[in-house]
Image (cartoon, rainbow, N blue to C red; front, side, top):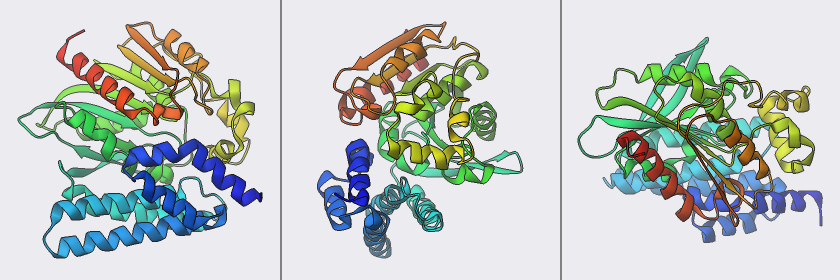
Length: 352
């Protein structure tokens, strides 16, 4: 088997459940993978499928079918996202497909149910980008701030956001420095606090929001959320999903395909050294209520990192390691997603 075939199989092994739970049906995802055949065709096959769904969206919009159009634009963005998320051989092509993803999602956002509003938060010499969605029904609403991982972006989360929206919780999915549109601010960085504070400041005076905040971090974002939590005044709760305590402690055991991701996200110059900066050791302990979730079969971030993360919390903490869960537990979304949405809703309601 060629190296290119091996790489395709490795990406599929680690991330097919994630692709499916994001909103791409399994049969469709597998058909695109089969059409790609080898890794060197991966990006073009996913982008071509994305353009097919973009055409569906345009036709629906022309016919006045706004719901269908919004769903198709969002799917088209997802196909482009998963085409480029692990593609590092041609960074120019990767950037072009990532930009197309952003453009498609901007067409989708106002058509979604409930709609998404694009937020720009002044940050450093530019802005950070996020998407705000408000639940149906009277407000003001509490807010879940969703922090992506090293290779995910705000465009990946509409299906995840629905769990919060259905419980009366607004969502704000962000791209921080090094993530998606946030790459204009450089590589992924350990201290995400200024970025989160900028995002919160951008929506601070919204009458639809009641000022209650929760942090939800996925994978790499799980570590970042725990790092940020002590700096957010009055935080109702923080959730870390398959995060880690210290990236450097298991760097050498990471799958090669993930280390390739890290070279892109953290920078190719001394990637291992930069990885060692992503640790909770020496950072302020978490005193807000915390929920730590992890999959027992995670082949990227070892499950032992969940206990270490929980030990870093000095406030109320719940730890759940699901024996059959994979990375980010995307093979059991029916279990962990309602659990974490209910947990955060209870904290907002004071039912603890």
